[in-house]
Length: 141
Image (cartoon, rainbow, N blue to C red; front, side, top):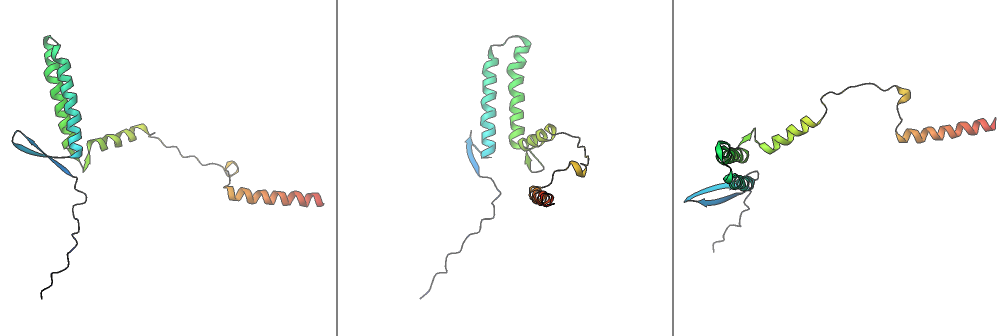
């Protein structure tokens, strides 16, 4: 009688790999992560809206707004969704830059004299006890 080996547990090795969506577009399958899909969805909808709004503009400025504006926005959407710098997405770099620029750049250190410093609460309670004892001793005298 032959016994089957016990089932083995499969240890996942790709824990930091994001899930992907496969989109068939014009006979070509494109694999996008969820983040990239949301970026392309939002960017594409804004590009389409800009295309529709600029359709009625006339003249050379209208032509530039109708073709150039959506093209620049579509290209920046592509760069924002696909590219990384040092394994960080561009929105992470934007948050890092914003937090850097919103904080003060100059830190001034000045020492606080001992008489102006507040004691921690445990020492204050201990000092109050001493102060009460001192008053009792003075009353006895």
